[in-house]
Length: 196
Image 1: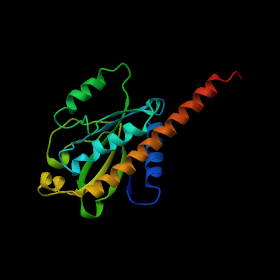
Image 2 (image 1 turned 90 degrees about the vertical axis):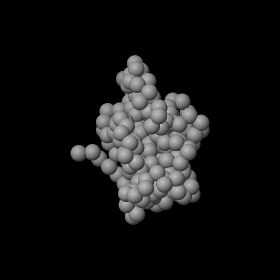
Image 3 (image 1 turned 120 degrees about the vertical axis):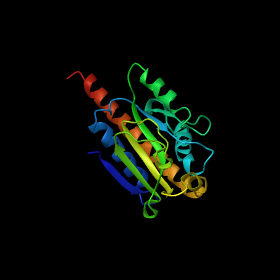
């Protein structure tokens, strides 16, 4: 059964908790020994669906290269039209990266503003009935609005303030996770190099 942790984006220390949970999940999965690749899915043409590219844009500015890689920004989004090509490129790499997929989702009214961190892939586009490939060893989703009716209209009429707030918390959390994983790798490398 997949492990999922839910938290409100506006709760105290949300970024730190998100980062700590994600780093622990990747470590338990045996993926903490390599820098993560954050695959931020969405488009800047829809307010609600811009969560992923907004997270990617902030991550790109915040992450040193040793902490991880980012695909999917406002300038170069990863969306339904290029997701399969992006995934094919990742599969061709010598060592398959630890992919953390980030995407917006729709849900119940009481879930709006909730961020979920989970083990296993996510299915992008499921909320708008698109058939896209699963992606990620782990995932982070943000519930940006209510689903169940006229999903495209709902995504386009999502409050930018909510999406920006959630994107900042998620990006800060992912930066924290990357830092924790890097520090753990550094400690392991030092211990392995010790002469005793």
